[in-house]
Image 1 (spheres, helix red, strand yellow):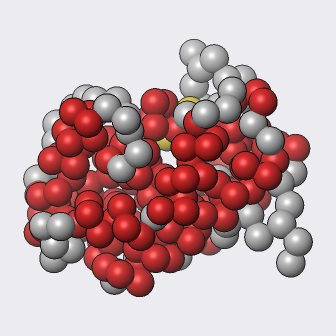
Image 2 (image 1 turned 120 degrees about the vertical axis):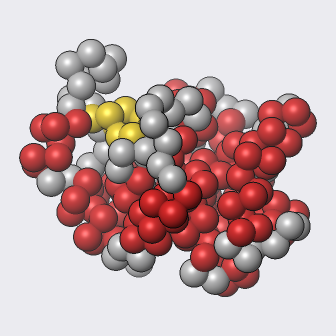
Length: 213
């Protein structure tokens, strides 16, 4: 099947180049207990993609999440603490790599790895989790750095397609390496710290999850 990025999709993918900066913010409010967080993560990880998308793009949900103060007209605010299941595994993988693998600031990278590692170890993913992750996402890391090196409004379609396709490949590699607990890790460790304003359509999110193929 021919890979296609619709005009709106190009806009969405350019926004995703900056997704780490947009999403990594402190989460305010009472924290979940470990057992509650773990149960929520397992439920979110096991949710089929179409169920996830149906909930995220339900008209009542969109109305409830739409922000009148957003700088993006018509955008909805998605909080990973309140609705971790609204994020897809590919979106969470992009954020994991963007926070803990590709940053050039070693202190920031080490801080994020130290934040996430205890969950990875508890889920049986190993104390060498991030070394293994880095070895499995080389193509995506190269594509993401190439995208980051270009101005957002100048990023070419080939770069966007390569970044999208390698995101999906990185997710497949990590699932093959770590098994089903990789997805549980994403929803327990990564999702709760994310928040974003989005105007994505269901078609665009589905395409990104499938590698824009």
